[in-house]
Length: 186
View 1 (cartoon, rainbow, N blue to C red):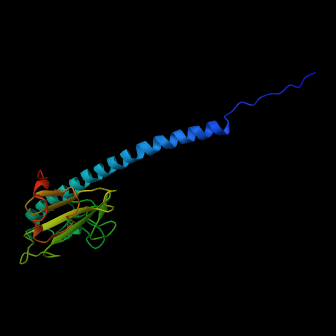
View 2 (view 1 turned 120 degrees about the vertical axis):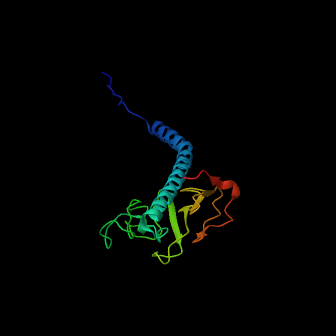
């Protein structure tokens, strides 16, 4: 009698390699688009965050008779050394974007670092802050975002699509920010 040989069902090594290669090709096509989408979303988040800072600062100006805040932390929520809402912690920004938690003068949110400029770190009625500026720069230029943003006491948000403009000072956004980069006020 003849031998009864049974064949096992399954995939050969070649078939599995072909499937893996197809998956890798699809991933190579999809990942760059996903990364571009993430960078665009980060830019939108940065513009929104900087607009919130401007609105919070306008409210601070009206509420405390000290001009604008001396730091982003002064726009943040109470906590630590600042137990209740006051000019030291006005509760107008969340703890992340104000740099309260984690504690930092240059907070990072969604791939953007925010740098705040004011003449007086602790404004007083005798020495109020009549100007301010805040700049948002990508943490990883070209990856977490490409554009930089600046907002100051004039309530004009400026955008540099090339990302070359990255600073301001306590008097506001520099005149070197691109004229054509102005976006609608927040």
